[in-house]
Length: 221
Image 1 (tube, helix red, strand yellow):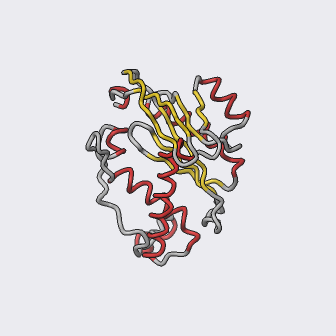
Image 2 (image 1 turned 45 degrees about the vertical axis):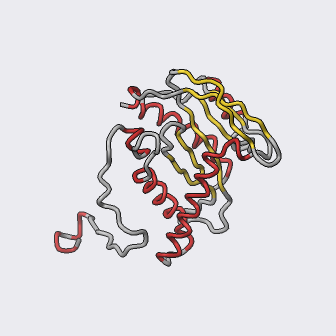
Image 3 (image 1 turned 90 degrees about the horizontal axis):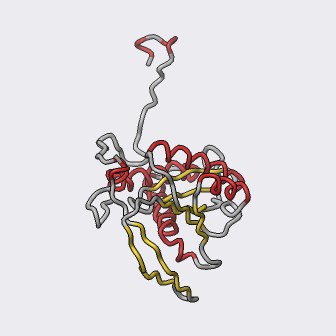
């Protein structure tokens, strides 16, 4: 389904100033291209319930679909990124062509360079102290963190559930925010169909876990 989408290749010239980096469109062509913007947020002041302190955020250029991965340390980033790229290439049947990141060592290292070179991925690095050049994922970082903070405050949930709140915010946005150009959600654009989300509940709603162990009997569940 994703291969049938007509994706416009966009090349930008970046003019950098101390106040703002302005993007000027200089060329468009009708080649199918897959770009991913990545950023690592953290460390969080409180570890998650699973001991994670960093958030790896990945945004698809075309659909704005977002993936989040939670890490214990920056050192985990290269392995997580490589695994993600392999899986997403198979899942969407479309190769990733461009990766955009800042100059952090979690992205600019020999492990990722060797992998990118082996599969033909172009790694584009933003200029030092110019986060505007990686603005899409930077804004998404702030949006997810602010949404998670609001959800935790409203639900009065403990702060160590921040990872669950961010994952929920990411899922909700992928299935509800409408892309202005296409009038579809990121999920629809990347999968070609809508997903029934009637199962969603307010974050922090009361729930009862079901014990489905085989040895408790039918009435004990």
